[in-house]
Length: 91
Image 1 (cartoon, rainbow, N blue to C red):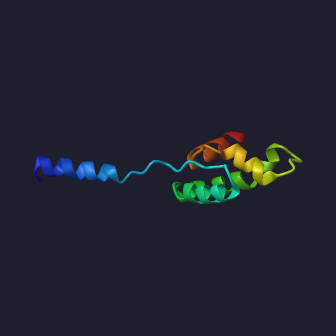
Image 2 (tube, helix red, strand yellow):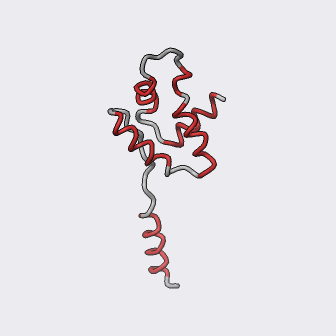
Image 3 (tube, one colour):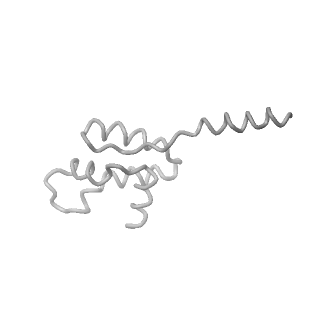
């Protein structure tokens, strides 16, 4: 393979990498959309930890009047990998 062609292939391969999805907690709709998108960024093995973290956020503050709002505030601005890392650190 010619060096120029090889360099072009490597350049094109790098263009396919998209940045991780950032969870948006600004509204329930945005949160649901971005958490679903962020989940797709994870390998299958991490998705279970991610799903559990999203469902059990209310356990951080027992008796919070709105667990959905708490989840939006807690995970706003995080990536799925950060959610998994945080959940594992809490285990």
